[in-house]
Image (cartoon, rainbow, N blue to C red; front, side, top):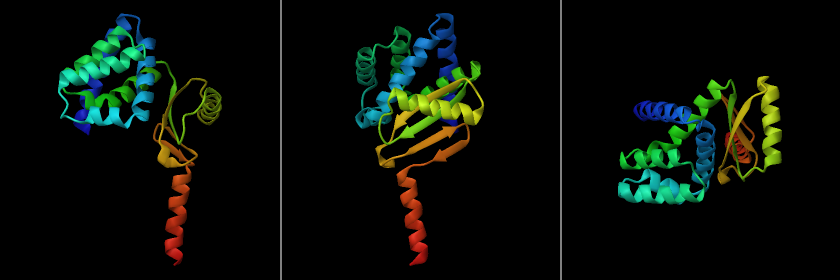
Length: 183
């Protein structure tokens, strides 16, 4: 994991320099957020990214098609193509997380991740962002939302190393453990 994290950081550094020089940092950040949402919703895409059985050029073609439909910037298309051809598509989730965290740090934002059982609409995201802003006492909150249907309901919120888990899944697991102790 540490090895792939170091590789992800090198790719992020290179992409950030290119995006910054071309004035495309915000576009690339939006592309990463869109791609993160697509990855969280598509088990098939995640399998393709993790699998080494698919030829690299085919991975590149598939990712180009997905990103093209999402309206990705040309730099993002080129970057993902390089990842595919270098056999590094499996670290794309790490690269996404690193890029967005690096951007938030450079902008003085608090980075938070929210995992919910269903897709959060803009109103829910705004309420969550406001709550995180109050907790962290920061006006700048970068929220990354993803979906994990196994949570059943509730949320898992990560702010740096802090985690707030209000998911029904966790509550049921705690109840089950407590009941085993009684019986």
